[in-house]
Image (cartoon, rainbow, N blue to C red; front, side):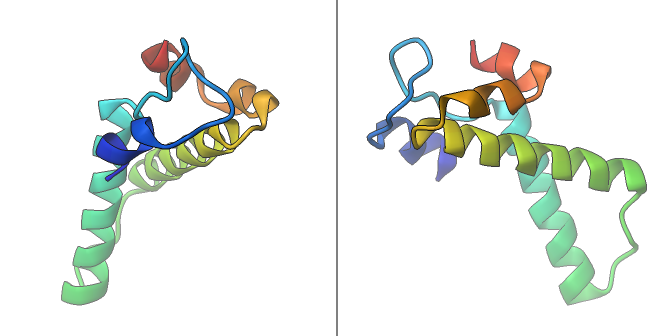
Amino acid sequence: MLKEYLPILPVRCHIGGVAKAPPQELLDTLRKGVTMRNRLSHAGGASPSTEDVENILEAVRDLLWLTDYYSGVPWAFGHISDVTRAQLS
């Protein structure tokens, strides 16, 4: 949904004149987090590693900063990680 609908929503701040979808790498990390959460809560799977949890939380943070930016908070773009900002540019 983020990839399909975020770029067509009306936004107050733009990247290169448009609202870009989150980078595929960020979406993949978020999808991995959802899958891990479902496996853990529904099937009692093994706990994720600290590194996995940190990567997922960083992806969530970047997504939240991006949505803040699109909603009209220009300084939020500076809080997005360097990697994600580079992928958006």
